[in-house]
Length: 283
Image (cartoon, rainbow, N blue to C red; front, side):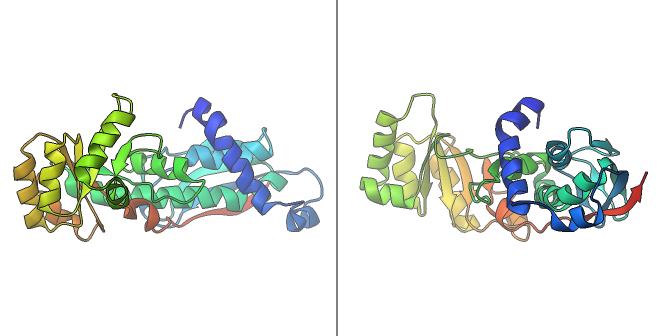
């Protein structure tokens, strides 16, 4: 995440997170550290995984005190091991103590997503199928969670509702059918936007491809049904399979031949990566 993106998009969200944790003051820190004192603390990984969010971690402390320095010993995307010292945070101990939880919350969550994403992306290695995330993200944390998916080796689906047309079951019902929904979307949406439609059976597949959908999402279909759907589509649209895709069942989908596999589990079910700030030292 570059500096421009950080300042335009991330800073306001990080500040909101800090304000949630410090409504008036950090009573505990002010009690034990009433005045400036320089110190440092180690960022230690307590579990093997893929690290993501180091710049966000660093930014938390910088927004509390611009003089805080974070010495990095690894970078986003690196595989880290239990017991590894990944960074040392140096500066006003009051900033280190007050920012600790918020900084770790971001880093643990993002690293957990990157780790889980990498574990699934590795299962797709060597195939032509790309792993996608979804909009099933934590409110106000999408920018961080989708970034973590990319660090883990996945790809981003549309970022938000303004980013592309995806006609799901309720949109189709509202429009009165697959063909009508696609035709209405073609008439309304800018021509540069691709139109994706979610289908649940082979009749809907035929209707979607004949109506000119750009991408057809095969939702909650069996592998056998997906193979038949791909035969019907026959390269006339990109294909995506979705619906309860996890690390446990993705291997069965590798040889089907879909262009994309999307998984909400990347962001809504990834466990955090255990990381701590330890060994605070007064310098």
